[in-house]
Length: 162
Length: 207
Image 1: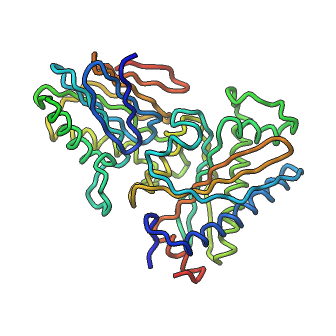
Image 2 (image 1 turned 90 degrees about the vertical axis):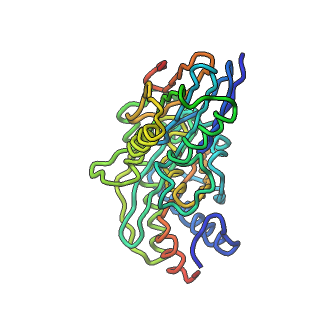
Image 3 (image 1 turned 120 degrees about the horizontal axis):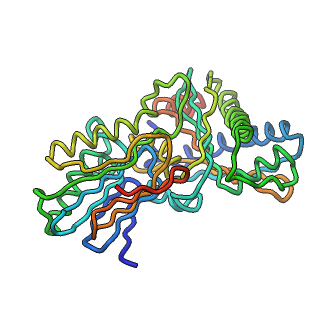
């Protein structure tokens, strides 16, 4: 077995091939996988909220889409990655619970996390190659740095490779 | 003095413990009346954890659990989530249906069992909120719960995201109900919005 690095909630990390990055049980959170296709350097962030703006306590950059992408990108560049060949794949952003009169901000957080993630990737000029987002179910993801494949596992909807 | 999970003093913690104790006591009584059998309850524990420690509860972020979730509003507003592990869900359902613990097929939760979980969730969380309303004198209304069975991390992310807007830690009450040899370990997340925390503490004369 190759090296497996776990990424917790509001956490991020990087590996070099053949390492594997894993994050368990994504719900409304979004897993952002970045990959240097030439040097096979991979990064994964497990974000909880769309934006660090208007939040007072922002000590942990891995918690927000905007600051997580920037921090992860810098960590990868420090390990020798070149931003020009970095691509992205994302998964998560589900809505785990629903109500009849559903206008709660909290319940739409998954969708907002996905939108914010796409915006920030766009801002850094990182192409989004694939995504498995939305729905009402949890996802466990494995990001394989030797191939750039993101494996998405669910309880009721099988396994998907993107 | 405003409420802040990262700066809770012992006195505020004691107040929360007392609320949890009365709330969970009411929930156990309600469960006992519904099932028509004695339900014992341990003194609830208040836990405060960092988000990346979530894996340590419920046996892992990818473990299958049951989440019962509802919103409350009126004088105070927020959400309540009651989370049960696989075995506890089976035990709770067996209290409900047969009472002999033989009803153990969590993997095949049908419509009927979902309804039962929704009803149990309604009674447990409802009696908890009723207790909170009685102690504080505040009016609290709540929605019908929504029930989901999925990965622990995915279900817990719902209350944790709410805490995430304030800090890096979450506060929850750990309760344990027992009927005969069967045990139900439940985790109750009571998440008033920050204004509501202050209203609760003020109504108790704490701030």
